[in-house]
Length: 130
Image (cartoon, rainbow, N blue to C red; front, side, top):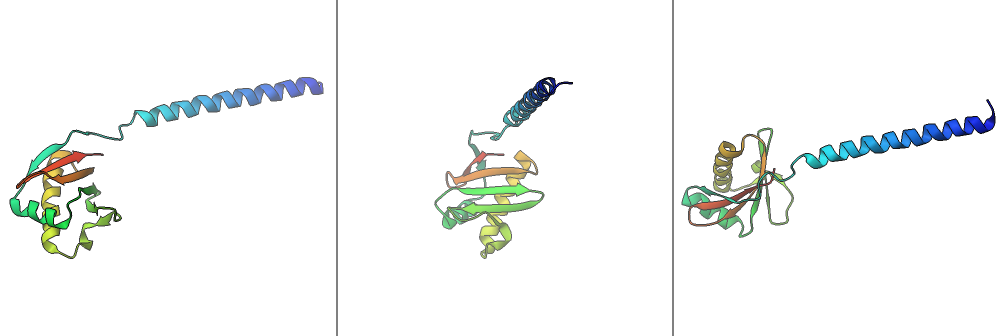
């Protein structure tokens, strides 16, 4: 085999390898893009006790982010980092967040992320993200 033929064969192998890599990458990207990142952007009203809503309103006027994963409940208030529920010193606020999470567990299952806003005296507006 001459050097010229060997060079052509190597170049063809490289082109085929690049084409195969591109094809695999596009399939993987398509599969990733197909998975839903947002489950529902339509807010849902959740009714709860007025005491629960008052406690959540006292914590912050901003929406709360609640995250349930593998049985653990985490929350985020304003621009603070996501923290476990156990880090809240006020047990009444912890109880209010657990009450909201229990109603969301019934609707969303065991794994979810939601934004919770106070909507009324005994109503919360909940938007599920994941």
